[in-house]
Amino acid sequence: MKIELAKSYHNGSLLVSFATQTKSGKESVIKLNDSQLEKRLKAAIENKELSGSECEGTLFRNFDFQGYRHVLVIGLGEHPSHETFRQAAATAQSYISSTKSFDVSVLFDGVVGEKKHGIENLKSFAEGLYLSAYSFDELKSKKSDSGKKSPTIHFITKLQSDAQSKKALQEAAVLGECVNFSRRLGDLPGNLMTPSILADEINAATKGTGIKATIWDKARIKKEKMGGLYGVSQGSDQEPRFIILEYKGAASTKKPFVLVGKGLTFDCGGISIKPSAAMEEMKYDMCGGANVAGAMLAIAKLKLKINAICLIPATENLVNGSATKPGDVHTARNGKTFEINNTDAEGRLILADALCYATEQKPEVIIDAATLTGAMAVALGNVHTGYFTKNTDLKKKIEAAAEASGEWVWHMPLTHHHSKDMKGTYADLSNMSSGKGAGSATAAAFLENFVGEGIPWAHFDIAGTAWAVGNRLPYCPKKGASGVMIRTFVELAKQFSA
Ligand code: BES
Ligand code: ZN
Ligand code: ZN
Image 1: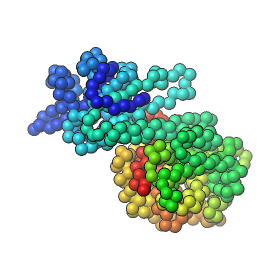
Image 2 (image 1 turned 90 degrees about the vertical axis):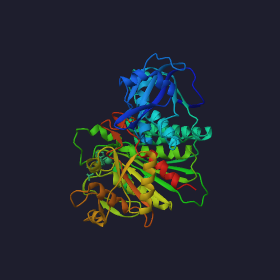
Image 3 (image 1 turned 90 degrees about the horizontal axis):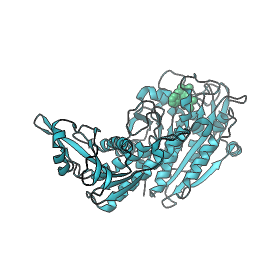
Image 4 (image 1 turned 45 degrees about the vertical axis):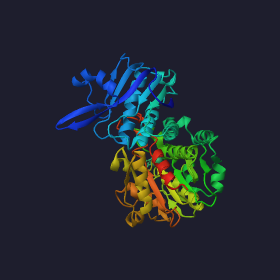
């Protein structure tokens, strides 16, 4: 897909326009963002062929308006937010592909009451087009039509200066492409997305971005005393990897913004094996890693003025003859010991070493993302991502970042009660809580042991949101990786930039 800025109408196959609803007494009046078009569609409006409700798409085929063959009217409801535009873009995308339109114009201006937020709506709509264009069919012998030719979308807007509009469209393209990059890594099955493949794919993607990639193999991981990552990898014939990405966009004196992501390429649970129902979904257990890599790529491509480091411990959690057994004790990089009381609670073990390494970088902040606990999906479902932080300033920044990105986050409790439940009997810590309930918070409490005193830290448990099982968000695949939190992490990084 190509996105361009246009001054005015020009011939094409599809024109996308918008309709808003305004109240006049009890009646709801529909306003189109082109008065000529509104005149032409008077009968359709009177016959209630279109209502202007949020994300409603009404296609007028062979309509021949201003040189366009088809016209699509998308409803925005009464008070569209930037999220309305993102979701409306999914409606547009479905008609772009069903009409097989390759030369599309979007009339962006003239939407009632939306001048103030024009630039963020423009960015959101473009972002939504990228997000909803994603499909994962590379493993099918017959490809779908969408992969063959890609459309050019012209945005007709004079709302802001061309420079501002271009910048917004460019940012949307970067974010959309980075989210789709991470989604693909998540969607690839375990046999085609091993720790070494994950490292190679991420390494390849960093080329030309200014990011320096360093990848540690199994021997190096052992030498570096990463007993959590090494211990989990013992059960697998695939070598683990520790992926380090570094981007320098600010003075070397500026402390780094550090991202950490769980890169578990397949989690069968180990000896404490998972039930077989839906076990195939555990290929998504590397989405934390994939998504922080996507965020890092976006940070570098947008040339944010920060120093950023991204760390991804990657391994399988399988069950060969050398697999970790319940009761085994391992030592993390910072010297703390833990007993493994359930080999399925492996994410926290590999993150432990990565958080120790993050701490050694003397960071300004550490943000981690992981598909860590099934309990999080039970607590919050698949729209809200639960996050944990004790730092009130960071909490404020996260809330603002999520507000700007259009993603949903929810602050979760993390207290000494949860920490108490993670004490070990034979080692410093247990990887399983001694209490019942609060499984996501006790997992976060375990992680806290590996973050240096005083470092602002937030942990995002994306177990419920990393992949879709329903179709709550129209710009996410019905089934597949979502790329969640990439946009929020980029917004957060902006707040830390110089
Ligand atoms: N990868 C899973 C968490 C998970 C489960 C994510 C379901 C998404 C959907 C993690 O490694 C795990 O198995 N956690 C255990 C922890 C428990 C043994 C303390 C869990 O949540 O059951
Ligand atoms: Zn597990
Ligand atoms: Zn896991």
